[in-house]
Amino acid sequence: MTRDVFALVESNTTGTGRLFPAAARALGLHPVLLSADPSRYASVGGAEVVRTDTDSVEAVVDACRRLGSGRRVAGVATSSDYYVETAAAAATALGLPANSPAALAAVRDKGAQRAELAAAGVRVPRFTVAETVEEVLAAAGETGYPVVIKPVTGSGSLGVLLCADPAEAAGHARALLARAFDERGRPVPRRVTVEEFVSGPEYSAEVLDGTVVGITAKHLGAPPLFVEIGHDFPAPLASGDREAVTETAEAAVGALGITLGPAHVELRLGPGGPVLIEVNPRLAGGWIPRLVREATGADLILGTVAAFSGRPAPVAATAARGAAIRFVVAGDSGRLRGIDGVAGACAVPGVVDVETYRKPGAEIVVAGDFRDRIGHVLARGASTAEAAAAADEGARRIRLSLAVRQEVPA
Image (cartoon, rainbow, N blue to C red; front, side, top):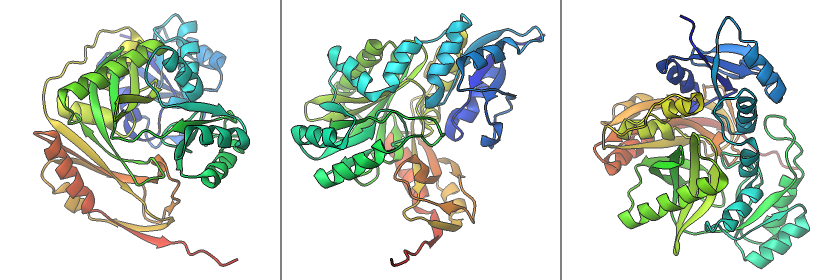
């Protein structure tokens, strides 16, 4: 019997993106990856691969229609932040489940997203969208230092910096505004947001079909960067704070029209309660869906495929444990000589997965974002605290050997 097709418009090349084909097969669907450059993927999870111009909605729609052999496309989606609008527009053209492409375009523009949230009464940091260094400095002066300056589009903490004074703000803004293309070689808007810095711990609410499934506690590296170096699930929050974070996240996705499928909602718990940092119309990165599954048994990837293919697959918790991940992060740029201690990390009670992303000989360039991660240790425990302690111990046992680059005097 010919199975219905689930089409993925590209995918994130690391993390849980490669697990989507298995989820599709679990729902009786045949996974097909549409990609402009299949060589980017070390693994496609067993999906059929069809080379397609994924920057073109028309090309994606045509590729879906040409899959042929009596197969019906049941859903079109993506696990990549960069292609959510394309996937939604193609699904809409094919009469398949999707969020509004126009709503997604507004969500992916951080300035437009903030404006919509503020208009809906969702608490966000004070912010200004700026197109010149002069506008950045004027906004920062009015907001008060330190300020967070970031591109209006992007993910993974790319280009996000806490600036302490006008010199730092001007330098960072000048570098961002000079960028014409993103890391995929696609044109980027030459606009940035200048935002109030909200103090307090950071969390993310993992949302599916408009409802919060759980809340993740985030561990960040040292300022002025915002590199995520670990996650704990479920976050150890007091009941009142958990309710407040849940209400804020669900109000945000409702206001933005992201009512189908996943959303990853980042917040800070400030002195006056939750402040919404940003909404991402996709599943969380950083292996958070795996943490959710290890802790609760709920499969967010399966739920996502079900949502976009019109299939019932309730995401129900079957356990009440804790899970945590710690990333191995390079502190310096240089050539990677080796990674020691992996076996020792695997031997820590509670550790269920240790993975390294780079091989000896690889050139490491510290970028100040998610690309600095070169491995992880993932643990499960009877509680979040137990899992976090195991992940911490496992990460401590891993040691990097780098041939650090030497600066040549001018």
